[in-house]
Amino acid sequence: MTGLDSLFERAARSREVFCNRTLNLRAVRAIGYDMDYTLVHYHVEAWELRAYEHLKRRLLADHWPVEDYAFDPLLVTRGLIIDTELGNVVKANRFGYVKRAFHGTRPLPFDEQRRVYGRTTVDLADRRWVFLNTLFSLSEGCMYLQLVDLLDARRLPEVMGYARLYRRTHESIDAAHAEGELKAEIMADPDRFVMLDPETPPALLDQKTAGKKLMLITNSEWAYTRSIMAYSFDRYLPKGKTWRDLFDVTLVNARKPDFFLGSNPLFEVVSEEGLLRPARALRDGAVFSGGDAMLVERTLGASGDEILYVGDHMWGDVHVSKSALRWRTALVLRELEAEIVALEAFAPLQARLRDFMAEKERLEFEQCRLRLELQRARGGLTRKGGPPIQEIERGLSERRVRLEELDGLISPLAQASDEVGNQRWGPLLRTGNDKSHLARQVENYADIYTSRVSNLLFRTPFAYLRSAQGNLPHDVAQVIAAAAPS
Ligand SMILES: [Mg+2]
Image 1 (cartoon, rainbow, N blue to C red):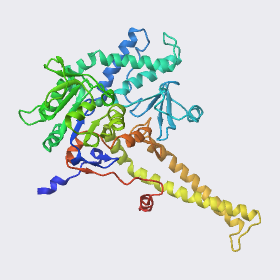
Image 2 (image 1 turned 180 degrees about the horizontal axis):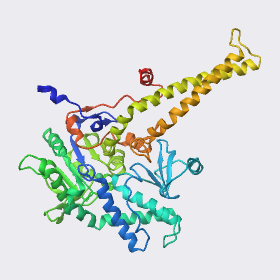
Image 3 (image 1 turned 90 degrees about the vertical axis):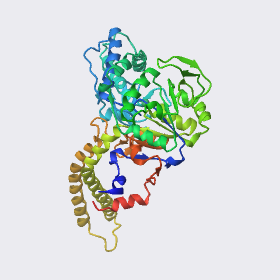
Image 4 (image 1 turned 90 degrees about the horizontal axis):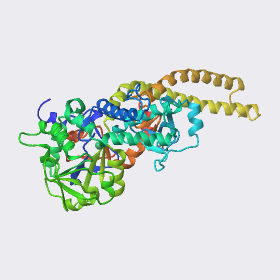
């Protein structure tokens, strides 16, 4: 491959930018970025393990018997929902129907799940349900389920219900985050926690050079932001440039989601140590603390669909900015990368499953027709020229045998398909054949989604990202897919 051809190479599918609503990047004047798990990715197990350890330390100080517990990074995933009323964590489909559940660290058998949730729909507006919005939720989710086990075994020193237990867990992890020790550890040893991506800084540099205003809008405080951004960005920028040169606006302590909803006091960070001074307006190149989205819109002279916001927090970054301001939105979903690779590896088996299911559907249809024919024949409604009863019965019996055979072939394949990417919970955006509750939110609130910010490097700042034609059960596309040779 020579010359121009090398420019046209496509990214691997796992690094694609996926589009729910058509987005012309040329029409976007400003791009705002969240920092943690958006511009900067962490080794999830290392970070969440430390968060878990801090949480555990706080609980041990209150004489809770958690000394033997360890962080299990696979116990919960982003997009699951804690049922604080029953001490469960559930995976729901796009309609809010619970499709899989754990009580504490124990999977809920299907019958029990149906008994408990048969008439219940997950409604995230109800405080009973807590959505795991980000990878930062994994340590909290894991500890909560382990504490549910302790509560059930009556081993906690206090009497409480599952909802109170959740609040205690949440307050403890919040306190662990707030006390700063955790972030001090990250800053002291970023090699251990930060997963560098050499392609993110050039992606932003391209956008800036193409005339976009770039903004960093993070809930992290200044000292942490400065340290982690310098560590992750400066080494990959042209000589003499730092991460500060990329951003027209830098806002720390942004207090999202409130940032998108109301007015917040603004301070300028006037020294590298983080000294604050009240401020009224944003200035190019300066760093501010607090502030709000309306101020950003006034400063940029841009609003709504001229601004793209990129973040990893389903609620705080994407849902609120979309519903309150109609900003264009991008969700960063890092887990997608490994999951797409796993789905691709599973594709040949998925195709076999599809073929078996198609055969099963055909045989079931034929079985229905034969059954009806038999019913009519026995009731004296024999069609002129219709098959004799013995032949109908033979036809039915042949199909019964093949259907039993097919069920034996389909069952292990269907189970394996439900476990792709995560044995306990299955693919992030699917529940069985349907979309997951997370997928529904992604669809509703994220115009585009992708595994990491640097995937925008391949698409360039000039891309016209088009959504695929929606797939409805009656779509011709479905007919084409069904007719495709396997
Ligand atoms: Mg974040």
